[in-house]
Amino acid sequence: MASQLLPLELIDKCVGSRIWVIMKGDKEFSGTLVGFDDYVNMVLEDVTELYEQHLHYCLSSTG
Image 1 (tube, one colour):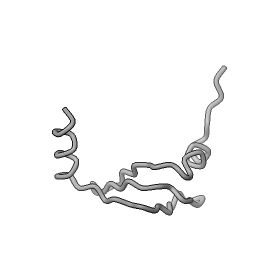
Image 2 (cartoon, rainbow, N blue to C red):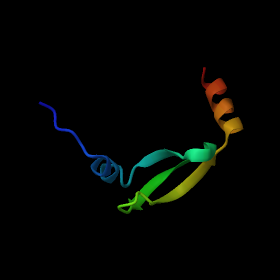
Image 3 (cartoon, one colour):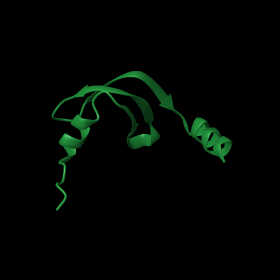
Image 4 (cartoon, rainbow, N blue to C red):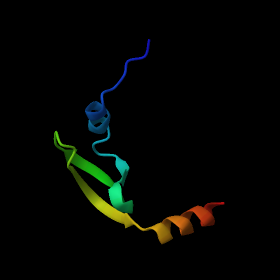
């Protein structure tokens, strides 16, 4: 039987990794997760804010 990770455990495993954050209000960020708290406030470094136009360009240029 496979063990299940709790949501905060999954986020903890991602510390130091590049992540993609999708927020309410159509905001999206990509960056390296430095840390987070119990309320899932995140600290990211090397952050890029992704805009809808940028996403359309990336999707159309890959295929």
